[in-house]
Length: 222
Image (cartoon, rainbow, N blue to C red; front, side, top):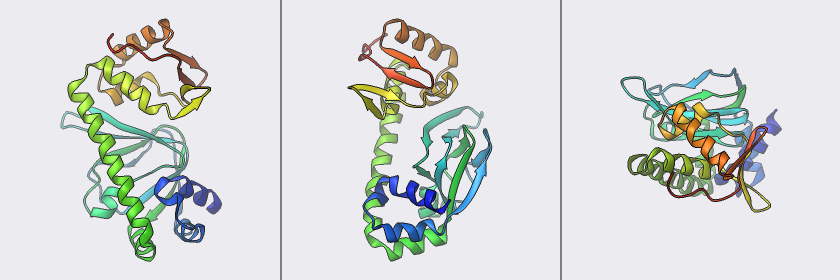
C-alpha cells in the first residue's frame, strides 16, 4: 500500500516535480485509514492536525450555516488531498469532508508534514503556488454563486468538473448525482433535474453509464 500512497502523492501537482526519493520519504509517514460511504472524515471546526491524501474513493468538501444548510465547495477523487490549510496555519478546520464512496486515505500528521517541508524547501514554493490557485478557484466559485442564476452556476460547475478530453469532447468521468450537483450549485435537486433534462434534450450533454459528456457548448441563457 505504501507504493499506492507514493503514486498518489506524485499525481499531486505540487509534488510532481519533487525528486522521487523525497516523495517516498513523505509516503512512508502516511497512515492508511478506511472510511465507509457517507462517513464524515473531518468536521468543520475540528483541530487541523493532519493532511489527508485520497488513495481511492471520492469525497465532498462542504460547509454549512447556522441553519445546517450545506454548500458543497468541491468534490475530490483519488490523487488529490485535503486538510492542508488548517494544517499549515494551525486554525480549526474551515470545512467538513464526507466520503461519497468507500474511501481510503493516507493520513500524514502535522509534525511529520512540517518536518518534511523543512527538509525539502523546493516543495514549499510549489505548495504556495498550488494553494494560490485553489484560492482563486474558490473565489471565482463564490463570485459565480453571487452573480449568476442557477442555470449559469450549473453550467460553470459542469465545465469545471469536465477534466478529461476525448476526441475534443469534455468528459466528467464520474458524474455527480443530481443532489451532489445541487449542493455544489446551491440549488434544489428539483431545479437541477429540470436543467439537466433540458440540456440532455437539446443535445448539449450525454450521460453514458457513470460519465457525462458535454457534446456541445450550452447556451448562455436558459
